[in-house]
Length: 321
Ligand SMILES: Nc1ncnc2c1ncn2[C@@H]1O[C@H](COP(=O)(O)OP(=O)(O)OP(=O)(O)O)[C@@H](O)[C@H]1O
Ligand SMILES: O=c1ccn([C@@H]2O[C@H](COP(=O)(O)O)[C@@H](O)[C@H]2O)c(=O)[nH]1
Image (cartoon, rainbow, N blue to C red; front, side):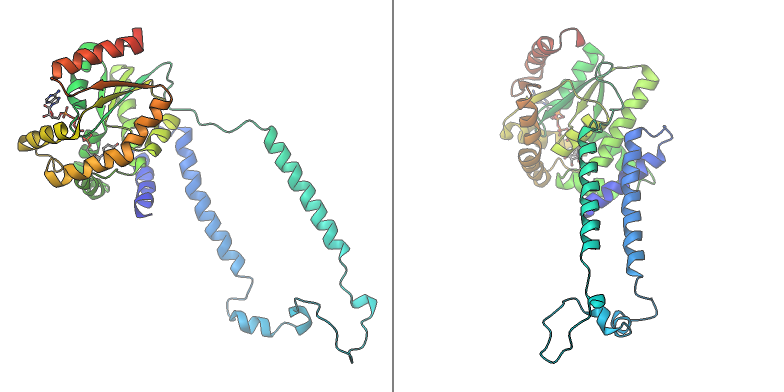
């Protein structure tokens, strides 16, 4: 709950800090917050039916008893028979119920005829090519991305790098949250990461006109995948580097000698592996079912892995590579 709340905060703050014009979907997030606020206000005002100066029980005591009775009950032997004018009339209630049900059915039927509401992504997949690059920690994603940038002019955006930059940005209110998540190998709330990626993509398109992106180490969780494709840009495919855990651990411990990364240590590596298996592999499985995964074994040398990457990407992308 706390992570979700801070995520919503994060999304709003990041967008507020961003001079770029808000896109329609971002307005939808705002209206969700407004709805929450207005529903609280409505509840508060309905509670004021009891005058504020009185306790609810004092208020009830002032009401005539006849009005407080909720059941007709059986009349006692000595109770004089009620006159017709005192009897409750049911037909007005029946009319109200019938009219209400009719109106409701009309609304339901009209809604069925309406087209479903859809969000338009910020970037069109016919214009912009997005490849997600996934694989376990240390599988070699960054190493292979550098080569693809060199040879095919992709723009490389590493979600981890963007989060580390936000963590270190003076004045960022998400610094501590990001630091804690990274150390524990946990996933930062999606609103933060998706906003960082969207901003970085927009900046790159504006400054260099680039149209080809490698989104490295993202999406690591199903909700991120769905939200990114809905509001930013549908991905063309997932480039997945497959590597055994023992090999990845060896690489990360070696990298940890010089990387200065807070998560290149045995304890964090163990947590990152767990998150990868439990949370990130379902994302790969999801895209595999959609036939959008290009899988490359990354156990061999960087050159061999790159040769396999080129061959498979050429087949999958053709002139989009
Ligand atoms: N095929 C390979 N064989 C041996 N070492 C490799 C290979 N590919 C990358 N490495 C080394 O392993 C370490 C991790 O590589 P890299 O940073 O590319 O992985 P990553 O998947 O991006 O990791 P992370 O998810 O932690 O960012 C680096 O020190 C890199 O030099
Ligand atoms: O989408 C993402 C990507 C990354 N994280 C966090 O960052 C670290 C490091 O990521 P690398 O790709 O290895 O640089 C990762 O363990 C997560 O804690 C994230 O939360 N969401």
